[in-house]
Length: 196
Image (cartoon, rainbow, N blue to C red; front, side, top):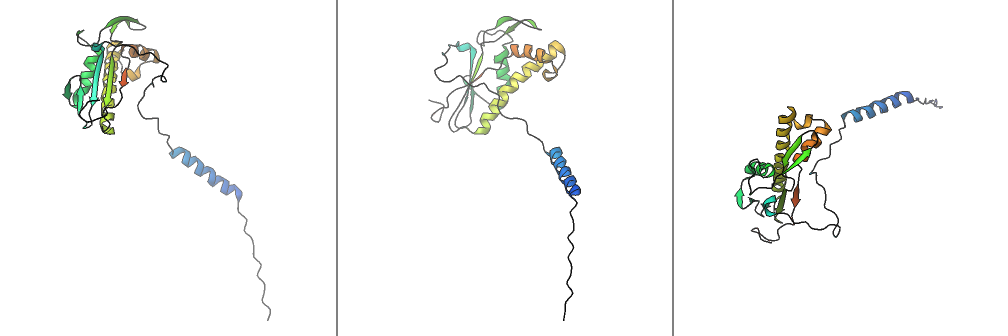
């Protein structure tokens, strides 16, 4: 008995259709993919060891912010809540009443703003314990940066009736000259309770 041999037909794949699908998938993924902007703390790192000379800073120009191992916040010499830190920092940075216990003010001629009394020598020194939680550290950093941002916004509103972010780059540079961010990171505490 002879069996009839079946001929198989090979189907052709339309390469144009496949290329179109690949192109559409590529476009789809490009459209739905978003690149996260850089996040984190903006800081300028200190120079390498041995390439700087220590400078002396008057005690009135330094605001010591301490986070203990128990996440207790000490600002100056008093224990404060995280909600109070922003206002204390704003008072320290701006020294609106020219208080002799707060940073000294000097008059500078700033482009676009004219003569302004600024506390250019102020430093906020942040020190943590080795057991301080990361969240407490971030909260403190956020409050300090928030203080600078509020001062910059207030000045922008006063001078140009705009928010800081709406200013031109030259105007932002002028405002930054008045409220220069100066946060120092001290070496972590080595034992509980705030001692070194």
